[in-house]
Length: 141
Length: 141
DNA sequence: CAGAAAGTGTAGCCTGGGCTACATATACCG
DNA sequence: CGGTATATGTAGCCCAGGCTACACTTTCTG
Ligand SMILES: [Mn+2]
Ligand SMILES: [Mn+2]
Ligand SMILES: [Mn+2]
Ligand SMILES: [Mn+2]
Image 1 (cartoon, helix red, strand yellow):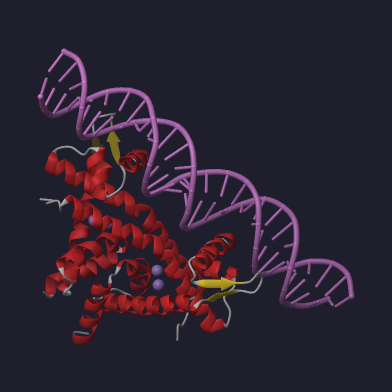
Image 2 (tube, protein in one colour; image 1 turned 60 degrees about the vertical axis):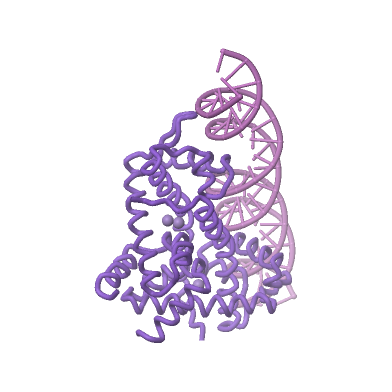
């Protein structure tokens, strides 16, 4: 039982997971900011904070990390905007989010559970796996 | 497009994801420690560190967090052991890991990608979703 | 059995991602 | 237009989870 994988293989897997986690938050932010920009025309720190369920101070600090990463821009008291790179990331992330939710639903997971679980799962779905999900949704359904 | 969910709903989802992330590492540790104990009879900090791809200092520090959480015990220079609670968690985590990997494989994801992605995905799969996965594996396949 | 090699523990540093408190800026109204 | 309410930014704190460096055990081996 258990049957451990080779040491290096396992280390590589865990490393990949760690790096996915470090980008997960950035992905959620750009996705949310894009949604707010699209639906309200602006993305203000307080809105972002309320939707994420964190304090506005936390949101502001993370936005400054987005800026450092070249994903967003913001001028004092003027809301947050996405760079081209940020917008591109948001687009990719939104597509992936949708596919993950749809797949879970296709497997019989109730909508709300699907949405909740997808919020975490999405960040760990590789391109390869995403393709498999999309293919399954296309042929089966 | 976009169609934002209600503020509180979205905040709850993100909060759930954050809490899952904070337990993800503990889950991986107990699973790994259980595997090492089963296959080698002991789980030493250096082995744990090598398998996780982190420094031994990092592993030692996290083990002390496991102790604080009542999941493990350890005596200086004597390796790490799981409490009953830790062992129970390891068992649950291993079953879940297996189901996630099997599901990905069943959807056509290549083994290695499945194993790699599952390492991150597993921590965000709720009981409800896990049931749906298991059901799919039973009926289809 | 002594010395070298390997493992272990601890200290100190950094970053990320939470928080509260407080000062300032903007927006809304009477 | 002035005053209050709301939003924003900043500072300072905490903990998790990485790291390196270094001292100390334990184990291996000639
Ligand atoms: Mn997410
Ligand atoms: Mn998402
Ligand atoms: Mn894992
Ligand atoms: Mn696992």
